[in-house]
Length: 464
Image 1 (cartoon, rainbow, N blue to C red):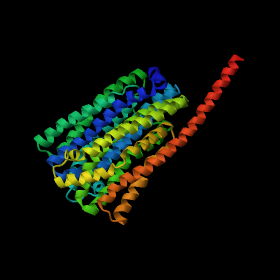
Image 2 (spheres, rainbow, N blue to C red):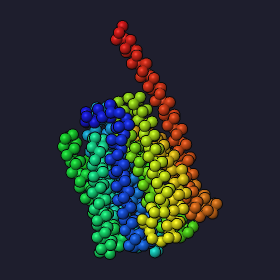
Image 3 (cartoon, rainbow, N blue to C red):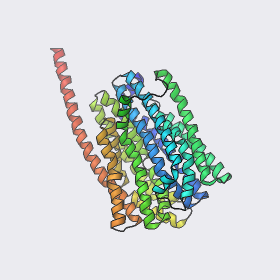
């Protein structure tokens, strides 16, 4: 652990951020490709109703992923803080309890979703035409939830241990196998949406096996206890710190569940299909800002534990700058090549035109939102659970969701009302995040000045 401590405490911030974030960004990229593959194969071989089914299942998948990220982020942050305080025993307890929580929670949810899949999908707005496809897909992919959750957990923990390659390699293995199996099951054997679900589940299991192999080796080196352990005093802080990450991930699912209803009422199944197409491309734009913010989190958490506030200031500034610049580059590419990107999923010219219009409205001011996600990850690193949760729900649940409902139901803007809610919420949330970070910067300035004065007094005492 000492080598990792030296890295977080002494390495140049810019170099350290790039070193940690690049594998995370690649892992996010591969993960989004992972999610996109089923949509491409299903869209081109099953048709529009198949894409509609994937959109209906997406909120469930997103909430399951959000729970996984909650545990992983909460554990890695608690681990980094304990590590910064050189509390080795606490670090071991945190990792063991986080792994146990992930196992127990996901197994329980798998059983519930499997037996109540039809009721859940109807609640999400499934039409009679799309329901059979959605139920067939969900009843299979739910069995990969535990393996995916543990892979996410192990990947985050390995980053905290200084190994940032496991996340990328395990996800890459899963993605490549998913592509190969999708071709075999969906195209060659013509198994339709069932084949896509089987391919996804098998690839998640294999990706987990790779990650777990490396996790076992780390457990042995750092003497992390085996077996499932559940200590409330350890688990509760993990959940509280990770709650904002859960909200940040799950609000996509909650939002899309409501959007499905709004679009179905306004324009029918076509609205849901367009949402399914644009959402896959939209998610790609987040990879650099998420990667940078994720890389910042363990660095910031370590320096909070070590009380190195001057270095913490530098971490925030560099992360904000890098996240914004890379987001601008992705935004330009997406704006210019929107028609080509939409055509990857569907061949229907009318759907492509509607998707391009929707997408360009959605991402109109996209780069400004990078500061919003930096603020959330910073608050998590500081252990400010309430503030990070509030910031996480602000953009999509407190601003975008009510806006979409008002624009569709009150102003009768139809599908355009849903698309307009994206840039409007981006602007409001980003301004709020900017003001919050300015306030945090003032607090850090005070702490740095206080530390400088204390250091000077000690020097005076030494020379006296």
